[in-house]
Image (cartoon, rainbow, N blue to C red; front, side, top):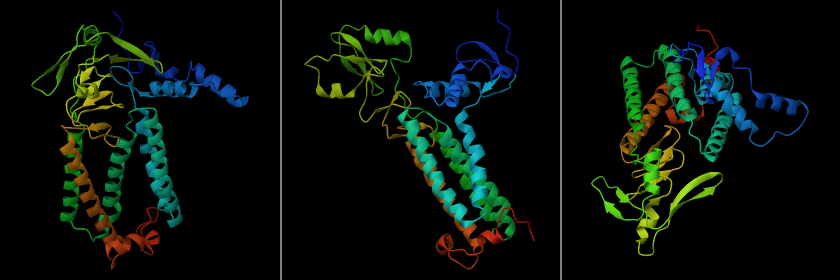
Length: 334
C-alpha cells in the first residue's frame, strides 16, 4: 500500500511522485531551450508546448491531501488587470493606450487557444475578476462621494447577484449527448457491430448499428472512426452521423470541437463561460447577459453622474474635464 501524499507532494503528469521543492529541477526541455537561446539556435518543433505543459503541471499549492494543481490561465487576469487599471487611472493618454491594447491582447489569446482547440479559464477569470474589481472601486471611490444612495447600491448589488446566479446556471450541462466513445467498452461495441440500423428512442437519440465494415482513419496522428453507409441508407443519416461520438445526432444538435462532445441544439461554444450554449442552458445564458448589461449600464450611469456633475451620462462618457485630477486613486482625500 502506497504512503499517502504529504501537503507538498503530488503525482505529476508522468505518474511519478514529486515534491514542490523540486519544481525547478529535471526540466530538460527548458534547459535545452535556454541553451539554444543563448547560442542563437532555433528550438525544435514542439519544445515550447512541452515547456508550457511542464510549467502548468508544476504550478501547485500545498493542500492536506497533496499539492493541488492551479490552472495557470487563472493567474494573468488576477495580476495584470489591477496593474493596467491603476496605470490607466494616472493619465488620459495612458488610459487610451491601455484600453486599446487590452482588447488586442484578449483577441490574440482567443485566436491562440481557438487555433489549438484548447479550453481555458482565462476569459471566465477575466470577466469575473473585472466585475469584482469594478464593484470594489465603485464602493471605495464612488459611494463615499455622497451622490449615490444606499437604495441604489442595493439595486446594483442585487443585479450583480442575480447575474452571478444566472451565470452559475449557464455553466451547468448544456445538453451533452451520451457519447459511445466515453469509455473503451462501449466504443468497442459500437465499432464491432455487423449491421447498421437506425431506430428511434424516447429522448430524441437514435440507436445505430454499423453496416459493412467500420474502420479507422489516421488524420494528423489521431485515429478517427468512420462508417461506410450502404447505398440504401437515407441521406439525412449520413449528415447526422458523428464520427467522433459514434452516434446519430438529433435535429439541430452539433459537435463542439473544444468540448469534444455533441450538444443538443448547439448554439456556440462561449469562451466567457468556458462551456457550450445548448438546449439546457440557453435561457440561463441569455438571462445572465441581460442582467450583465442592465447592471453594467446602471453602474456606469451612477459613476458618471457622481464624477461629472451637471452633465448627462452620454456627454460625460466622452467629455469630463478634471476627472483625472479630482478622482485619482493615488490622490489622498481632502
